[in-house]
Image (cartoon, rainbow, N blue to C red; front, side, top):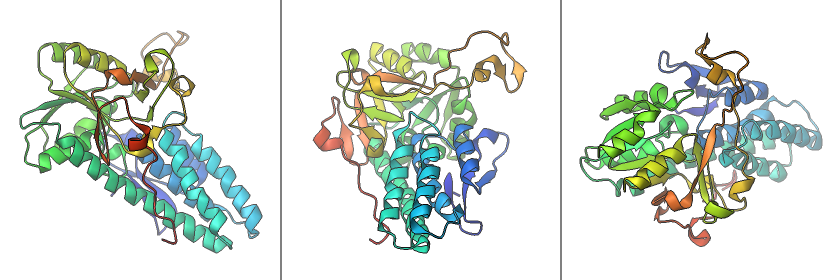
Length: 356
């Protein structure tokens, strides 16, 4: 199945439960908006493009679960539920953007039944478009890799971070399809280990030669010449800001900035692969809210105490990498060298409307 999709038998949102990996590959079905919001916050579904799919399907779920018969009351209730979905995680722009994409269908509907149909059709189109975009990202990004290259990646930007195929790992998969032998060094990505729990599982399933390393070994691997390119995804890309972020920034899983600095120090290309829906041309770097996660993620390891229960914790989920450290940004429309040109990058492709 796809990472996230509509379950037509139950009128619900089905997703791969990523909190169970690598031990168990199982599906979780969110039958209510509350369950979907919980799934987003608990990282059953994660990754900016996959969250876009969750946002889109969340509006359809709200429409199918709301039983108001008056169109105005129905639309108000759906919008309230959609706002809860959109605000479940603050940093990835795709979530709120795709919620708004599907909410637009409410204004075009004349009946409650039509609103349900239109929001679901649009949500499915959002998910289909994500797969198409990721395929094109992979094809463009693969041109940056040579046969025999080793790619370092951080967190998980593969099929399970998107509706399907992936962004950063999609580049690897497309290179593989093009006949290039490409291996991957995956950072474990503390504290929730998305690199070890998810990325390595994906890569091994696709027969990609993979080596897992602790996050703190990335500098040594670059120093020893083991890495030909660092390729990561993004949760939000902005085009301007203050100081070192004057040319913009890439917000991605915490630790990305460190890898970018190390790649720059060792003259290794640093590549960001993301759909244009991840680009936020309206927000400056300093205005992006960086999500802070539960302190227990550091104080405990899988339920076992790892630190004093009252030790202060700073647990940001993302960090900003100045665009000056990025060599290439790969989107569904091509490969770009920063600083990014607004005319070339934004706005994102339009998703077909329900009546197209």
